[in-house]
Amino acid sequence: MSTIELQPVKGTRDFYPEDLRARTWLFAQWREVARQFGYEEYDVCVLEHVDLYIRKAGDEITSQLYEFKDKGDRHVALRPEMTPSLARLVLAKGAAMALPLRWFSLPQCFRYEQAQKGRKREHYQWNMDIIGLPGVAGEAELMAAQVAFLRRTGLNLEPGTPDIVWKVSNRQVIQFFLEGLGITGETFAAVCVVIDKRDKIGNEATVIELGKLGVGIEAADKIIDLLNTTGLEQAAAKVPADNPGLIALKELLALAEAAGFAHLIKIDLSVIRGLSYYTGTVWEVFDATGAMPRAIAGGGRYDKLMETFGGQPTPMVGFGFGDVVILEILSERGLLPTFSRGIDDVVFPMGPPEFAVATRVATFLRTQGRAVTVDYSGKRFKAVIERAEKDGAKRLLILGSNEVRDGVCVVRTLGGTERKEEKVPLKDLGVG
Ligand code: HAM
Image (tube, rainbow, N blue to C red; front, side):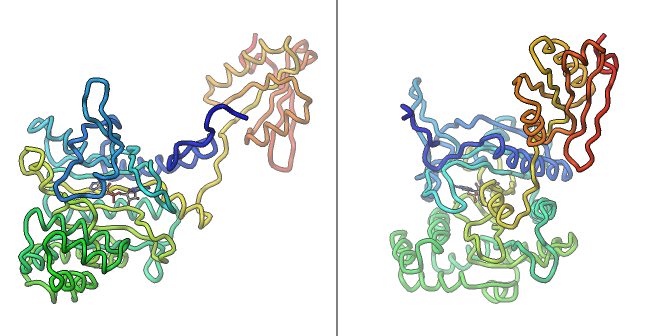
């Protein structure tokens, strides 16, 4: 029996090499799409000042923090999301940076959540953000990047019955409505946090929670009713034509049309987002079949966050796209590529006297850009071949005492049906 706990900490994951290959592949896709859209990668430490996440509106994320005092009595937290760190970076450099900035990152984030399908206590997030660009061209560009990534994975995003849907709203639409009910300022942000939880807690509990914020039952019922609004026409019927949120939604649809993904957008006022800093467009990306209830990705415009941190007004918009849900979806649909170890050659010295020459051959092959391992196991030939084939190697280079004496190496092709074997002079393999 082992004396240590062998399972990872609850809600966190181990990545054995075969698991890490999928993550590395996913990150490569995200990086490639970000590159195609001209975004630059940034990073910060996972350990942050806790103050970045303390918000008056009562965001759920604040109650899910992994937080502690360090030995210098600093109150710190493992970041639950990247957006506040991004705002801190931008604020720290101030006017030195030429806006707009297009930045992306792949942070690991920690939230003390109830672990369930699609949700863990640690996850990686692809973040793409634009800093310093007002107007929905930013939103359209970011959604286009999400579309580009999901298309690359082989999911169907064509008109008809696409696999994925973008549920989009604008907080200014709902803000207009709530202002009419006398809900403004900080209470508005707090109300958004509550109604975002409606799916999870149900209508009744939502009304009770709203009551705690001073929203009467009649007003709460009206709010819940408003959340059933879908489609641009229905939304337009709820607010005046000059409502900035409505105008922004119209403009966004026009840009999405131009970019060829308007068919993927569903205007849906029930999308609020649980983070209180959003001020305009908000969106969440879902599996269209509904089989995966948790959002694949979420984003929005947060034009006031910099001011909250004491900076200049700076328009910002972006999204976070987690690794957990998308890997589950791709795996369930058989869309994950098969990953091999990527080894080109295995060099097999048949005994210790051949170790030195095998090392020289491997060193030479690596200078040629090939991925090479040396099998020092001394196992039987059959076992060596099986292992090399399992590792996906393309060639086995056999070095017995006779070969070395004759100045040759037996090179055998692996995999495939036709097995080829030839003797290659050692001098052609960097020896002698
Ligand atoms: P969020 O909606 O809290 O937004 O998270 C974004 C995405 O991260 C989710 O849609 C999901 O894919 C993933 N995610 C979040 N929590 C978990 C979890 N416990 N387990 C697995 N995956 C999870 C934000 O974090 C914003 N900061 C995004 C943003 C960037 N807004 C503007 N810029």
